[in-house]
Length: 452
Image (cartoon, rainbow, N blue to C red; front, side, top):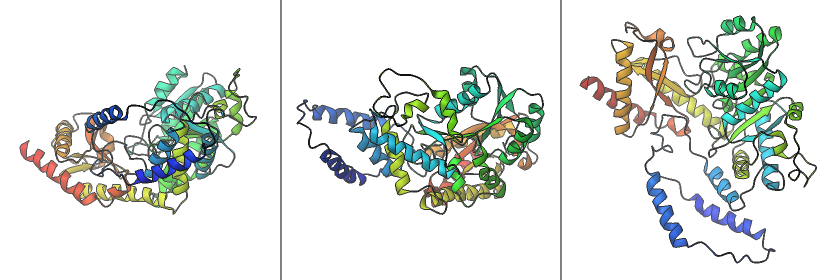
């Protein structure tokens, strides 16, 4: 099941890399005892079997997407050098590749002038965005929706900045009226607009948030860690497309290439529209930045040592799959959304289920229909287990009942939240696997309903 043909390409690339250092004197460092290495690696392979099959289309639960083979190969190739993309001394080639790759991401968002770099993940990228926001508006409040990632509240506490949540509408998007009511009280420095929530894939109404900025004056940071690449998709709903069209007006944006960008963990990215924010990072080092007058990535980053291999992998992937509309990469995203729309339609037509609102990106949220919300919550967990026994792996989420209100019918609302099933269809092949996924879901549901 695991792709292995690409290992031949890695061997060829390693020989080419090795040839570039042929002028060095022979290194007689003792080789490791390969038989012991083989034994330990075999044990590691056995241990790693204790995982869900994240790489397989029947894994349709959490946000786990296998890296593209070119990303795996490029990352592995770089490991023989192990560059550090902090200062140019430690990663000359990989630093240049990082700058190129980040510039392509910025261009995808409509920015030519920009300041940005890779990070260890979305959390660190969001931390940098809010750190800059705090530097520009010291002590002012950070706002994000109730469905925004929990990291914003936690990061604000780390940065000692006030944080408040704004209520959502019945489709898990920030409520503009509630936002304006809070803005009218003043003392708001930054609003975080989520472009693809991790629970439901909902996209905050960016046009309305930008209109409020004209009256109240605040920074807007886009947390597009999950959904950012969908700006390339051509099959979004009109409202969603309208929000993505306003990305160039943001002050900063975060995206996670290790989600839809086909990269290994961890690879996040922070990009600022105004390159002048780089002055906020200024610091001195007695030894790090003197090998070149060019910008060292460590001079615009809160992190110090960072893996150059991540930059090499991203650079290689974007060379193979350019970040353009109507390209192969964009079509992959469109397939994910088509799969989600198809699954949502099947669920909506089946009387055994209650669906939430239609997916904006590729996340489907639903629950079994029951006499009450409490009963449905219990059944959701049972279906989750029954599906897993059939090798169909979903996820469980706890979401406000309001997200399902339009479809609850006579179900008794005896709880404010519903434990529901959640499926992230983020692999392009999910489109062609939807029939077996649906068959296994129905078998699992029938087993649970008949035994309850």
